[in-house]
Each structure stands twice: as C-alpha cells, then as structure tokens.
Amino acid sequence: MTAGWHECRMGYRAHFFVGKWIFMRHVSQTLQALLEPTIEALGFELLGVLYLKSKSDNIIRLYIDRDDGVGVDDCASISHHVSGILEVESTLKEAYLLEVSSPGLERPLFQIAHFKKFIGHDVKIWLTEKTEGRVRLSGKIKAVDGKDILITDSGNEYCVSLGIIDKAKLAPAL
Image (cartoon, rainbow, N blue to C red; front, top):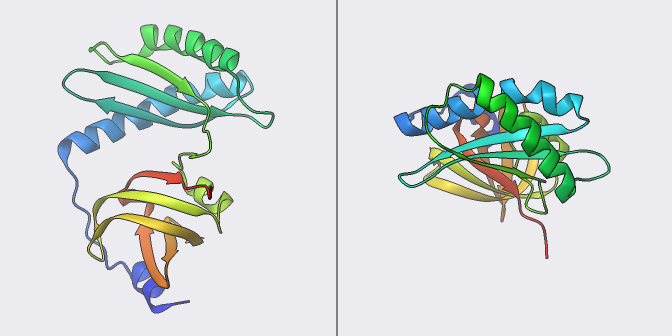
C-alpha cells in the first residue's frame, strides 16, 4: 500500500457539510429506500436517486439498469409506477419533475459496490470538501477498501471517502 492510502485509512480527513447538501442527500437516500423494492420487483436495479433542488425546479432523477439494457419504454413504465408511489408515500410538499434514465456512457457511481465494479476505469469525482487541496478529481479507480476509494491521476494518488463524494461518474475514453 502507498503512503497516501495508509493515511486515508488512518482517518486524516475532516468532514464538513453544508445544510442544503445534507438535506438533498437525505431526501435522495429516503427516496432510494422507498422506491428500490418496487423497481427491483419490476426487474430493474435502482442505481441511485438524485434529488436536486433549486429556486426554479425540484427534480427527482432516478438511474435504473438491468442486464439487457434499458429502453425508453422501460423508463416510461418505471416513471408511471414511481409516480403512483410518490403521490401516496412521499413526504415532499413541493412540486417536482420526475426523470427516469439509464446510466449511459458517463454512468453515475453512487455506492461503494459501483466503484468496486469499475476498478481500473476512468472516473470524474466532485467532492463536498477539499482533499489534498482539490474538490474535483479525475483519474483511474485503483482500489476500494471499506468506504475509501483510491484514485490515481498522472502518478498522484488520492484517497477519497465515499461520504464526501457529491457526484461521481465514469469518464469513458473516446
């Protein structure tokens, strides 16, 4: 193991969160737990949920997948099922737009299992706090240990805890 990886595992990280980010992440996690059983029963994997809140729009974005791929009709079907659940079960009091999407080439990574699955692939990561002076990283996923992800970029290594990742997606080579 490299020195950087060891330092990360030893806990040399500070966690500072912004209220709005915590709220949006909490809503996303709550919606994930609410919707996942139904989406799985329909034969799909719910990769992740993003709740995006701005002054003009509130968006609930679902990323779904399955082994044989996802088509437009699949997204429409999931949207129909999810809309019914949200009308009955959701505690959201504000209007929102519901978007259902396949992961696409720039597949979002939400869970530690997603990072493990794509070890060796290029990734772009946006952080909620600075890691070694940076809030954006890009490079290859080198290793995953517990909730820590090791990213390499031009010979530099960065250890990132899943808890401080705001957004992560694959960066496919073109």
